[in-house]
Length: 402
Ligand code: MG
Image (cartoon, rainbow, N blue to C red; front, top):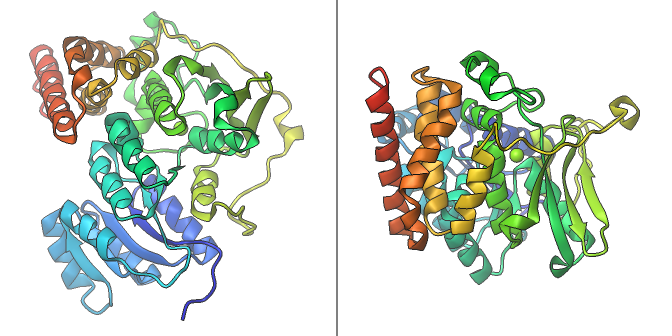
């Protein structure tokens, strides 16, 4: 028999990463049963989660790590599986007596998260989506599956979680515009000249959000905001031109929805990713758990500011809008090129201002893939874009091998 719980059980994909561990915090704070955890190869961290949460399944996508983990947790009841097939098997066979079923929180990094998103929807689970590449790369496929299953995705991205909440104030057909907020990143108000001198350390010092290295670089280039426009277009069925990015330095409003009557509904809270992780894992309830979230003190906030983004200095935001307007596999090309180029930047092989330059060149060369729509053709476009980005960097730089 099952203890009546107001929340679904949980499987965390990418449970040892930044968002994954925050999902584990929320599960701990709310007593949510964790049925499965997965990681690439961080065996020690997964072992600790197995001993704390006693999940039915643990999956290591790296085969050798799976073998290692199996030996380490032989004394537990957790079944260890390997590879992406292991994730698929777990999602297809997991059982619960919880009448609310299972929420799968996908916080896998990068394009590798797309297949597990599709497996989750195929298996009929609720999807809490932190892997934005699922929508950037495969948005058309993901939303088609989602609509066929009559499900809605719970976004675990502060802006989209905010929009999701603001959408409850009116009907979808009454939405006039989405105001997507951006912190502006560490280089807000910099000129192109100033950007030529910025370092990796400066780039990784984000003013408000604590996140992984790759997404912090994407925040600094505004690529992340561009990806978020693409996510919003898919999640909320709006046109690219109906998503207006607005720089809001305080990061207290997490996004807004404007309706036909010019009413703008905003969602505010302390900037803490756990807020939207918690919202996704407890929806449609609002959690009353003490100690997880802090209240927002408006007297302390004082004032809020809004400004237009500078897409001349940060052209990747505009490029993302062009890519989603073209559609097909073009957004996948954008993402793949950006992954390779950012990896090169993090290895200090290229300069910050070169990120946009290389990504733009790859996309310009591959706009023809706008009529590629199937999973296989998207993966092919992804591979071609990576090759092209590596070749460009390799030509110009000092022995870059991602
Ligand atoms: Mg975000």
